[in-house]
Structures are given as structure tokens and as C-alpha cells.
Amino acid sequence: MNDTQSQSALRPDTENQVLDAVQWAISEQTPIEIRGHGSKQDIGRPMQVADCLDLSSLSGITLYEPEELVLSAKAGTGLDEIESLLAQNNQELQFEPMDYRPLLGRQDCGRGTIGGVLATNLSGPRRIKSGAARDHILGIRAVTGRGDIIKSGGRVVKNVTGYDLSRGLSGSWGTLAAFTEVTFKVLPCAETQASLIVSGLNDADAADIMARSMGSDAEVSSAAHLPESVRGRFIEGELPRGSATVLRIEGFGPSVDYRLGKLKQSFGEIAPCTRLDPQASVQLWREIRDVEPFCDGTSRPVWRVSVAPGVGHMLVAALRLQTGVDAFYDWQGGLVWLRMEADAEAELVRSAIRALGGGHATLIRTDGTTRNMVPVFEPQNAALSALSNRLKQQFDPGYILNPARMSTDL
Image (cartoon, rainbow, N blue to C red; front, side, top):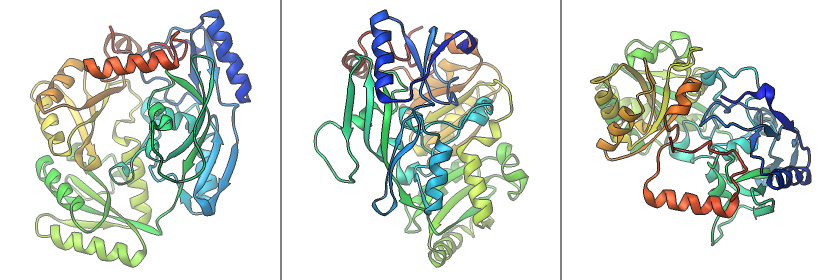
């Protein structure tokens, strides 16, 4: 784990100062860690670096045009500040970026920066309908590991041809460039929402119900399944007894009522159905987003696994034959949150994923020793690895930025 107390922090508050800092690091051949609020600092391989490029002072909203659905901000601007401003105009980042702090025990820092949102390609339960951060980005400014300022995209919502650099750098976890300014598309908030709880289903039947709901004309915006083992840890144990398969409906009030009623009519003969009204629904989906059941203040390993929605429950069943694991499902079953009861079991998890046709597993929480011993991010096949290496050579050939954070070499 990074020894932040012994690091020397560089705190630029302009893009030119970011450029100066990176060019200094290149000239001195000194790798640096890029950090915003540090809310996701414990994800990835520990970085043994003496200097930190702290972008939290590179802050401020530079453009907000509610009528044009566009917002630009310096990369170090806090996510809470941006969401507060959007809420004043009944708008939002529709991909509802999750907050990793409770899961990682990092409540001592800010929720995160808007640059960090794009760098990690954050998303929430609405991803199956609205996508992730990369699907809402319009433009960026950034400083590469070559010591160059780059600009991509702009402030207009339109389709373009050619290589989309903004999306290409999303999810790179600061290993290719340091964002200095980002421009996002924002959208109006739904007038209201409600959730239908289908109770008592096993994991396989829940997968079928979620698939049917997403394929219906009810326009379900989120679908999750909370097995009995975790159900009581949501919204203060107020969910009905048994497992809970949760379907979220958003929009205008009469439309929400009609569509939720159709779902209840479809599934009511299969299992008991209960409606969660807006306040409870908002709280529940926030807790699903932030992995509330596993925010237990421990370092027990937590995996974030992305697979085909129809096989998520098969993955959990296969793992339970070999080790202790707790789990729940988001994204119609395609996102599986796993908490291992003992070791990280990296090879066991990844071999089970391969046996079911492939997927992607990231070890989100573990102790510092394990982070050095297992690949935290999914190892790439030969073709993807070659592409990643070419990108690294183009953007950061000296391995100056966040060195080894995403490395899967042991």
C-alpha cells in the first residue's frame, strides 16, 4: 500500500502547472502517482513512488449550460459539488457513478473528482440502460506521459467519425494521461421512480424474471437480485422476507404507475410482489450501487465480476461448491459482487469465469499484501495486451504515470 505520509505532493491548480509537473517527472525519470481525493486509491497494484500529483486543487466548473445539457469542469472538481449543482436544475449524471469509499473504508476523504470518474469509467445500476461514464463524455483536455497537452472532442452533443480519444482514455486509471478538464453530457432527472420487489425467488429464477422484465415494454431502468443472505442488510432490513428481485421504473408518475402495474400483473402469480415508493426506492438503489452489504469495515476480499447476465448465478453456484462466498447481482445479473470469506481465491474465481464463457473480474478490496501477490485487474489475452502496450508507448513511454497500477505481471 502506498505510504502517503512519505510522499512529496505536487498540487497544481492550473493546466500549465500540471504540464510542468509531468515534464519535470519525465526529465528526472521519476514516476508519479496521480490522485484526486484518493477515494479509489486502494484499488489496483500498490505504487512504489516518491511523488504524488495531487489534482484536487485543479478545481472549478468552467461551463454549465442547463438548456444545452452540457457541463465542463476542471478534473479535480469534487463529484459532490457537480451533483449538487445539477440537482438545482433537476439534472443528473445519468450513469449514477458509484461511491467506493464505504466499501474501501475511505470515509476520511472526498467522494471523488470528476476526472477520477472518467479515469475509472464509473457507473451504477442504470448502466444497462444508460451506459457508463465513457458513454456520456463529450470532450477532454489532458497531459500525457510524454509531457504534451492533448484535446479531444468538444462541448456539442453530436456524432463524429474517427478515433474517439475521450472514450479511449476512460478506464485507464491514470496510466496514460492526467485529465485536466472534462465535458459531460447531462440529462434531466426522472420525475419519479418506484421499484417492484419480487420476493422469494432462487438465483436462477430471479435471472429469468430479470431477463423477462428487461425484454418487456415496461422500460425497466435497473434490475438486481438480492439473495436472502444479503437482503436484510439493505434499507435497514425493511425489505420483505426472503430474497428480493428488484426492478426499477422511472419517468412520469402515471407512466410509472402503469408500467409497474403491468410488471406486477405479469409476475404476481409467480411470487409475492411489493411496491417500493420513491424515497425507499432511491435509498435502495443507492445502497445497491455502493455495495452496502459488504461495507463491513473489514478487508475480506470483494470482487467485482462482469459476465453475461444469464450465467452470473451459475458462477456463484460453482464457487460455493469450493469455497465460502457471499454474493448479490446487479445489471440484470451481469454484475456480480462477491465477498470471499477467507482468501482472495483469484485463480479459483477467474477459472470459474473462463468455464462459463469468459468475463472480467477485478479485485476491489483486499489487504495490502494480497494486492502485491495477485493480479487485481483482469489479465489480458495476447491481442489486448499488445494493444495496451502500444497505447502505453504512445501516451507514456517512460512509465511515468501511475506505474504498475494496472499491471497483471507478478
